[in-house]
Length: 247
Length: 265
Image (cartoon, rainbow over all chains, first blue to last red; front, side, top):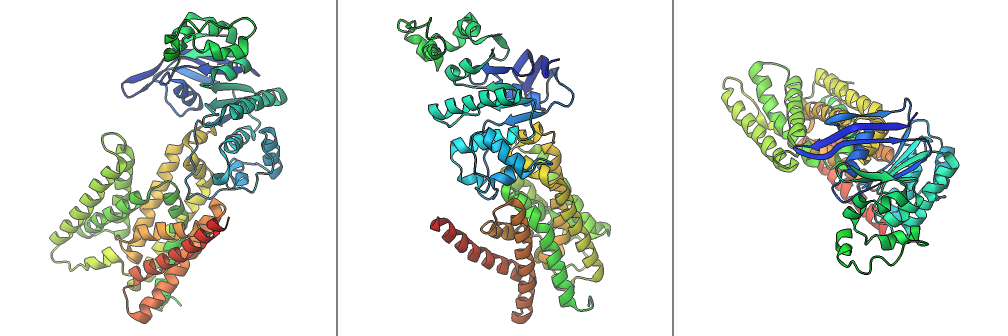
């Protein structure tokens, strides 16, 4: 049985429809990436899954007892709120100090327990968020552009961590990302979203799909070359306008 | 021991400080300072209504504060920004309240007592209401603590953890209304927000965790009430404002400590 399934989901903000008739299912242990331009409803889809956005129609069904680990797009902690990493990780119920240490280690940051959240670097902060998502041993991780604000090396390392987590714990991963090149190589399946599901499939299939190229242009092919370098290169030289489309 | 008016006043001040401390922390963290202020100002309309209808001031002010807070929460972000809406509602309620009180001829009302508090006139039954209300606020916040804190950090995080941030917001709104209602007698509508914000903001300089901040704020509030009342008695100054002055001085001192600590790092 799927961990979660979305059937015919539509979401609107006021009169603006952001998602139309989206269907999607996530199986245990798979890494699925959602790509799509700004305003394509990626974040709204995740919000609908966790129950923060109400569907206008359609439904979201979660497997009974499904444990979700959520890493938000941005988490701003007000300067006036003092909180240590340990306290932050122990916000949920029944979290021991040993759990905190284990989660921090799994997220690739040890020895941060006593630090104030406000003193962490961007990369450390995102990893603490990841640790917090992992702490209840979730069946699925949801990540909403979790590497925003990290440099290329930082985000590559972060996604490597996600793969390690999946390997070690077997949890499924559903993530949104702008960084097509890094993400695509790490995903089992890619869903291209633009208000509706344009196309989906393995990274190789999506990267060559006409719908995907229409959205992102062939310009991203240069980046994709990281993934498909052995048989796909040099094709963006005669399409300078496609770079514009990619942005 | 409750026979002495100073004892009753001190206990009333400490009661309000205890309720205001944890609530004040959330007011500071969630940047609701103006919201607290507005809710408190609206309470003067509640005073007028209570007097006109000859009902308890506590019930009247709490009802108006609650209606005000819920209305603002529901309307905010639609046509007007939160602070605009608060400015309109709070001052309208204050103005209507002041006008309404003037219609209540026949009853001689000391309006100053409601604007600046009348802590020295706290009776035994007032004390019961204040401590009852304060206990309710502290219990509500303690019960919802984790969920409130998670929702304050990030709404989506709360949703993903199976909590409902809107419900938690309502808990805070309710606590705010209760606090306003019990604090009117102690510091008056104009200074209630000070009791919420100043101790919490002062505590920020010493605290490493949210819980510590709430406890330290309670301590600072309690000390402010005690020292403020004592100096009001000795210097013959108005009691409510004296309490707030002491809290403000503590804030300034602790801010210096916090600043030195940060620059030492």
